[in-house]
Length: 393
Image 1 (cartoon, one colour):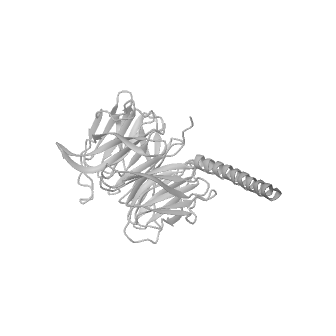
Image 2 (tube, rainbow, N blue to C red):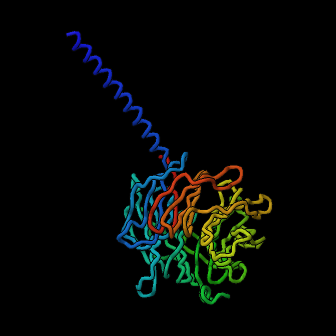
């Protein structure tokens, strides 16, 4: 009888220990889940494939975990996320015949687990939409149509869906490169920090257009001055504002350069300061650039090289806004189409389109340099990376 009691006591002790261990482990798992961020990737894919993927990201270690994927949209190459964390928007970078050649833009509702459900899709007003952005009041979604050479805007409806096109502008003209610049190619559209203007980089015209923005009315109107020029044959692609709002950095795809502009917010005017190469001085191979990002503190700027397959790291002079190259870091893959900094700026995630991988690099705080990668994930033709906002109820 005594032996049986001892056995029961031992069993109870073991059960109690296991229960305690379960609560400790499960508590840690919950804490880990709460600490995980999410990011979404856009890609070139068929409608049957998971063109948009959701990943978990550990902001302490930089590790990445696949969570879910969404099909039903062709070539969702570029994404934008609503600050509420409830909605995601994607281009459908296609040349579909619906009256005129046109692509599409789509809205999605984000579920609790990060999964997506399409709300609606509308035509973008032009062929091959390649970039979208929300205005800062999030009343309007703006799109740049590359092959169409035009821009368009759509009101955000209650419930996150997209309304009918409320604004449209067609660019016209050409520039010096007959194979790339015989017609306009709107490549990106971004709101100014005060949301009074939208800046549009047009690769085909070597111009950065400025539009007056009225989100309440859903309109974009040509500004005066209407644009700023970059050097002929440069091919402006994307741009980024410095956090101080007084400097704009335009990355030029064809020339592999970054042009620094002084921004005058009252007039919406851009005045060129300088232009810097994104490449090492001894590099003689082919190259084109893609993305440009300023880190949250405004001390460093990053630009991607396709061909050299690197991220160019620049130090920013806080007085003048000018750039000095400090590093060209291999992206450990081919054709870094896009990249993104983690929200705290501690990691850089590079999307290598032609080697089908995303590589995570820690950022050295004191220099802005990219250190040895800490994680890598495989996925088909990644084009865009966007972190979901951290939303607290």
